[in-house]
Image 1: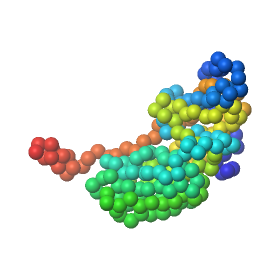
Image 2: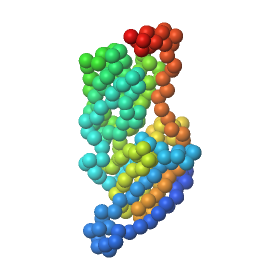
Image 3: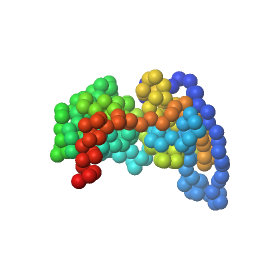
Length: 226
């Protein structure tokens, strides 16, 4: 999908190490994967980035029935990776009501106020980035990445993701990469055998709840004293 691609490649990639399995057979080499490590602007591991390969497929790489929960007045997870055509349920694990919405062209919607007894479900048929918000709690913000690629995985706590061996190009997405939310970093002419590091010009993003109000603080003190 051209709307997902940045015309110019503007990444700094370092080939960290290259090693071949002891067995020279083609079967052994087919089992080798490429470990991509994504770092932020400070050189630290960046979790929850999306790393994709357009011309690869993996039925287990993206879930088709996903969950975007609401826990402690926060969306969970912050970034959800799903395939095109997936259904996403929106349970409310809080004991208060939320009103989830999105104005994103990929999937504009609004879920009326609902409690933890309900879990509305929506289907995401178009690829793109869906930015979520809550009409009741302004600090709540999350992203659903509806992948246009055949293979998409998220980086773990160490900023790492596994890709099939032999890929010649892959894409990396993270919120705030550019001013256009759907833009991706395209890493071309990949020649690393087992390890490659990519630096993104971003800092980690997160939902930042406001400090409790004076009324909430008094309530919390009373609750803790009981």
